[in-house]
Image: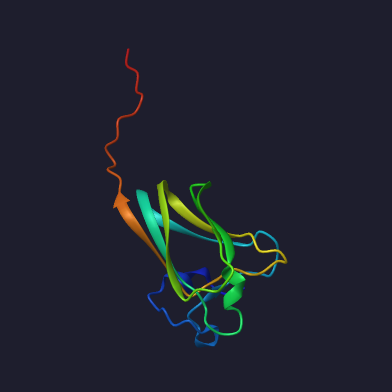
Length: 128
């Protein structure tokens, strides 16, 4: 397993041996997760896939925001870089592998786009 920070270091180099990609263990339901600085409306995410031996490993995965699936990706061919629509509210974004047989999650760069929610939301307060 390689540091998850490599997916958000600004380096989009698609070759794993250049120390620019994150890599999980090789097992069922492997995942990578990133936290936003504040709750946000996540419109879409951009994922840079590896382009060496194992680009096909990231063909079947779910994108979750705060535990709710916002996109199910099922591709028959590998991608280089792609945008995936999400349109979900939350502060944690997870890429969950759905590959069978099991494949690791390898991401060379990850970017989330959307609108940060205001922090002065109305809550259900009671007073005496």
